Length: 181
Image (cartoon, rainbow, N blue to C red):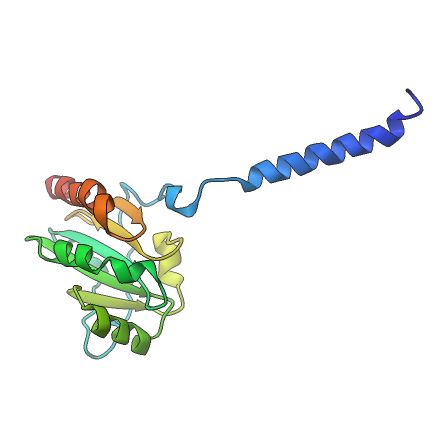
């Protein structure tokens, strides 16, 4: 048995390392990761408008006394295509501003996307290189942030605003943010 130990020990150590690495890869999915921004001020980032037909939002607009819902989307995003009715419902809420941030896309493609599906946004910024998305902690699109009237992020929701996501998560967060802002 002692003669086999030098041969068995490296195999056991290697197996333990493989198991350890495999377990470390099994982390939470991006939609389960908590946002570091929740209950903190929204990033103070200025971006250009989507194009000459859009008005950009500025950092001050996120703390202008009203609840803001920021939806991060892209024309290449398949789930973004199904959240139009939910975004229209948010846009119809009184005292709530719905802003869009186009993520890693071109103005032409984003404008065509909005022409095809409708444009519910009051203002639209363009994050063509994705740097602002990094500041916001965006893992993918669509993602939606609810920001109270003081500019504090109250919710990050990854995924399309449809069904229970809209009615049981985002709309209640908007109502709660109204009381906190």
